Length: 568
Image (cartoon, rainbow, N blue to C red):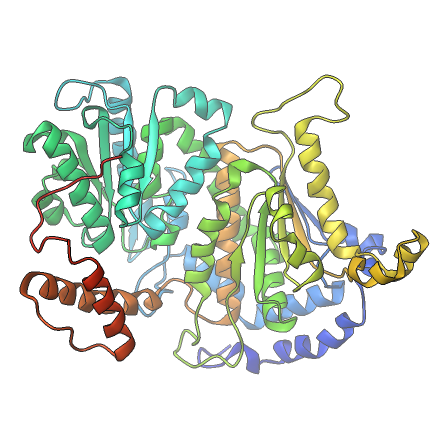
């Protein structure tokens, strides 16, 4: 396909558009009665089972999606990504998060250099440093062991590591490795987040990790300066070198900040923020908490899916199938949202992380060549763990808007509970819902069924479920570090597949910039008004009114206030 051609101009796209009418004539009740179809929509790999038989799709639909993948040059684009070509054309960068979890002997080239050796140099440094901290050979300014870690970052420097940390907090192996330690994340520039993060912490036993590629991210650096002041006020200026380290590429600013550049851990411009959890951004703070050996298993799980994505035929390729089905749901069936529903509390931070990976990657309105798209791209992602979500937003999913769902289940609970005399274990109770909800969405309940149950006539319409609501089910064998890595990579690659099909750049994020630049103008105005009494200028009537009200109501804030830290 020529680079200037929109995917929507191709014949396979038009064939799928025409195919929608055929699909809308069928119901999932009927599709699921075809055992041959259902069997062909089961895929297994490395302990993971994917069941996509509850999608509004036939074998013909799948074949048409494969034809769309061919005309979109999907395999070629995947190869270009893995080969280190600069597929992020607007920033002239390679996209090589797969190199972050490649085995030591792998060869992945970028600009004529094998980047895997660079990756392992950093991983070795992380292992060495984290073991020094965990063993007590690296201590704080007063000689106490550093048992507490605060990682400061925002966006991809926060959401991915938090997802992994939350998933491992209840894993038995990780618990054992983390005994006596705690890891916290500080992201929001809101001072309330600072207060909550440092509550109960002692600067003498705390190590702060500042995560910022450029060391210029406004929110992150203000939070870093705040915690630097927290350390200095308790321990003196010289303590910074013992209590603060960095994940950054800007060694000059790291040193200027007061952190020893030898204690800075690098990553590269071919690592996008939202794809950076497998770099020092995530691996360093997670290794401090759980030990490098546990986090290396996480990297190996992600690499397992990387290899699967690269080499498996599309018919059995889990991320490719999921990506194609998402394109089908969004661009052809007109379902703009997706619910991510893990049936394990350990994955409560999966949906917030995937929100960023998906919506920042594919929330685009132009093709990779800058041509406005005549179709919608991207998905609205949200979710909560089951069964909590069932008592929250499932009402809308069952009887309101049609929202395709990802159900994620785990065979073995991290923390099984058995109560004598109960019909099932706690985990069986949870999984009963995992198995039931997709069928409830698919089959629904007809007026005739309700009448047969003697439901009063005036309630029949209220209790009718139309069904025919699509979902996929992903069943994991367990939820250890390896499985968490697998799940992360599945979603990362699925999102890339969607972008490759839509013909957009999933690896830039210019939409983040405009709000930042406008905030700079407001920041200057607030400073000028507070310190010099200057009038508000350069804003529209609405914004001027809001800023005026804010300044008037906070007039008790001193123009040049003394340092004040949270009091929780």
